[in-house]
Image 1 (cartoon, helix red, strand yellow):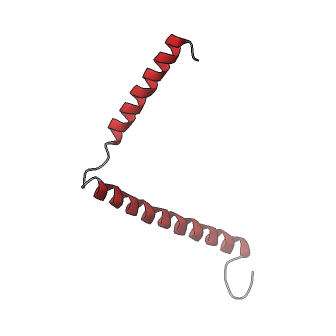
Image 2 (cartoon, rainbow, N blue to C red):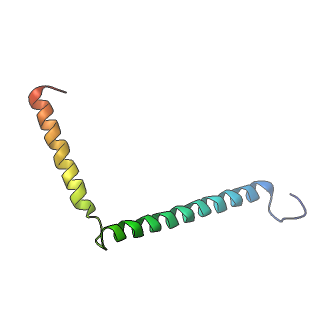
Image 3 (tube, rainbow, N blue to C red):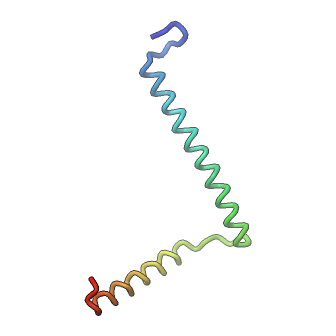
Length: 74
């Protein structure tokens, strides 16, 4: 422990890591908010229907799997 700080080195290091993670998370959140705003602007305020995207992806995968089973491609 040094005279400049009441915390031992390992506690200071842990606090610095916590602060770094928080800063990283806050930067990610700001980027995410900016991306969300850009997407909404491009889509004229209409959000992306994620449920519809997942459903379409599942249907596509199921159709691919069925074709592969029929052709013996697996």
